[in-house]
Every structure is written in structure tokens, then in C-alpha cells.
Length: 285
Ligand code: R5P
Image 1 (tube, rainbow, N blue to C red):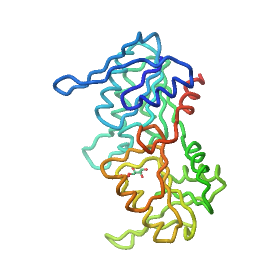
Image 2: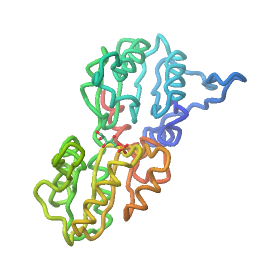
Image 3: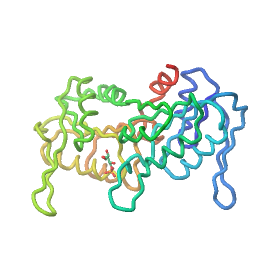
């Protein structure tokens, strides 16, 4: 039985289709005071696959409710977008490691033999906070496949910082393209210059690749820099299209050609599905 949480209904449906498994009917609504109401309407059976991204606090509550429904049973838990994963360090005194808090809360519900799957979690170190088996799946090759369909010329894959350089390298090797990252150089106390570390983007098609686009600030800055340097067309590719607030407007104003993203979060730009990747991982025991 595949259980699709409120944030991952389409992806759960796709995974169920690939695995030829039943997709449970669930109800997600709220009590009059605003608290979340969750109900699995089909007989849950002895084990289940739960698919639920956690882009919001409400989604985290719904995930914990689903886990409680399956308490005492073996669960394969898929959290395609793992919220709070960026708070994996204490940046200021008195701050929590929210990623650890999330992992600890989820882990407490899991029975022996349960497994946890994430997709391009912001930092794999977060998975060390789980007692149960974990696996982070890499959607970069799927994004590379979609980039290939664009038929871009003289392509360079650029990550907006050194953190996503590995993703750029993986995509570039699949596409036979060059890759680079935007290096930040501090010129003075308040002046930072960003430029491709090695490659001259002038006259070339560029795909900026990152794990997520949240406010769009990082990507908008990357587009502007690459355009200033004479890049021909600039595309964005990202696993998780968080796209908060006016992120899409920012990216369009910066002159993005198109945005490619996966269905770890279900948005209009989520044209690449990770369902096959998830289904394969679940099926392999
Ligand atoms: C940061 O390390 C991440 O990989 C992303 O670059 C970042 O979270 C994007 O955030 P925003 O879209 O708000 O600039």
C-alpha cells in the first residue's frame, strides 16, 4: 500500500503506478481550530510506503500523523524534500539543529526494518541522526536527461556555489559538457564579486544547477552575473522547486530562459519525475 501525504500525492500516485501497488485513499483536512486532520481510509495492512515531502510545518505534522497511524509496522518512508535540512549546524549560540530535531522525531516512530529515503537532501550528514537505514537518492542524472532534450549549444553547467559543484560535475559528465561554479571573492567589507571560477561563459548556453531554489535570490544573482558576462541563454535546473513568495518573478526579471525541476515538490515547473528513482530504491531490498 502506498500512502501519499498531502505534499506528495502526485508522486505517490506515480510510484504506485510503477510498482503496480495500491494507492490508499486518505483524507487531509483540518479541525475548526486549525489543527491538522489526517485519516487513511483504506485498511493500512502490515507494512506501507509513505511518501511525503515536508516543505511546511503543516506537512511535518501530517507526516508524523501518518507515521503514528502505522506505528508498530514496518514502513518505507520517502521524504523527497526534507524540510529544515539546511539547519544542520548551529550558526549562532542558542540555535537548535533543526535538521536533527526533524530526524529524531521521525525516527522515533519507525520500527525495526523500516527504511528512510530522501532525494538530494541538502546535506547528507543529516541522515546520521537516524537510527534506521537511510538512503539519499540522486536526481541529478534525471535533470541531465531533461537538459539534454533542450539541445543547447556549447553548453556549460554552472553551480551557484561550491556546495553544488558535485551535481554540476555529474550532470556535465552525462551531457559531455563543461562545468564550473561561481566563486565569491570579497573585494571589501560590503562588496562581493561573483564569477565563474575557470570558464568564460561569453556566447555560451548555461544551465545553472542547484539542489533547491527557495527565495530565488541565489539563482537570480547567478543569472545576472552570467548575463553580464555575455552568456547566450541561461536556464535553471534544480531538484527541489521550493519557490517561495515572488521567486518566480525574480527569476523571470533576471532573464531566465526556462526552469527545470523535479516533482519532489509539486509545482508548475516540476516536469521531471523522481518516481522511477524512488520506485527502484523501494523495490531493491
Ligand atoms: C544553499 O546552500 C542551497 O544550495 C541553495 O543555493 C539555497 O538554499 C537557495 O536559496 P535561495 O533560493 O533562497 O537563494
